[in-house]
Amino acid sequence: MTRTARGGISRRSSSSKTSQCVECLLQRLLCKLQVTDPNLSRSHSSFLKMTEAVENFSLKDVLADFKSCLGNDNQAVLMDYYLSGWKGLVKFMNSLGTIFTFVSKDAVAKIQIMEGYRNSAESDKYISLQSMVAYELAAKLVDLEKRSDHPNSGCRTILRLHRALRWLQLFLDRLKTSTAESKTSTMCTNAYNESLSNYHPWIIRKTATVAFCALPNRDAFFDVMNVGTSDEVMAMLNEAMPYVAEVYEITQQLYAQHNLLDLP
Ligand SMILES: CCCCCCCCCCCCC/C=C/[C@@H](O)[C@H](COP(=O)(O)O)NC(=O)CCCCCCCCCCCCCCC
Image (cartoon, rainbow, N blue to C red):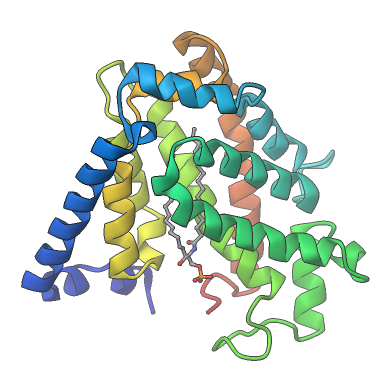
């Protein structure tokens, strides 16, 4: 199935009245959540309370993990730093409120699968994404056509995170060039539509799109990043984003080279 077919117009246009009804329900659910759960409020002051829970957390450290991923030669992507970066992102996402739990749960499950490999007897085979691909392919541990004997191979699990990393890259790129008036929900939705949504079924796409509406505004978002002033956030993003982009590109090439970009 091609990207276009998965996220395509045909699927969207075929879902007429039913889709509108479900969308309506999701919208109502979201409105209700925003009224009853103060954590979901978009107001700056209530969002600041959330930052208390993640006091010592800075997005700067998270993005630094993606720099460390590249090691010294910038060729291999080191697994432990990659997973550490993801764990930090999950922590950040959890601070955004319960509405994002369905996203973080899935990311956590995937991180745990990979940590399981890193703590197994084959730990050294999973030291980098490159060694993982070489090992799993040679040992025939990857379901290439259909999920069956190896439903949670490292290759397919990392592919899901890799696709999500593209969303992150596009979202942070937008944030980097945003102005005080820019809406985080719009930036997030556009980044999602250009990337991850192409791999998600209709119901996940709709739920994700509704959840994005609960994102805090840009200033509050910057506060929870815990990096400093807007200018400092921008400077940090300018410095860190090339590393995220490089990790993405190296992984993309690795998967393309081995025909692994469509793993079921
Ligand atoms: C900032 C707001 C966070 C928005 C997150 C955007 C991503 C939305 C993705 C919705 C995923 C829904 C959950 C289910 C996914 C799975 O079906 C699906 C396929 O897996 P399967 O083949 O095993 O079934 N899984 C995936 O595609 C992997 C999704 C992993 C999502 C991780 C997103 C982490 C976002 C980190 C946020 C940090 C933001 C920092 C910005 C300053």
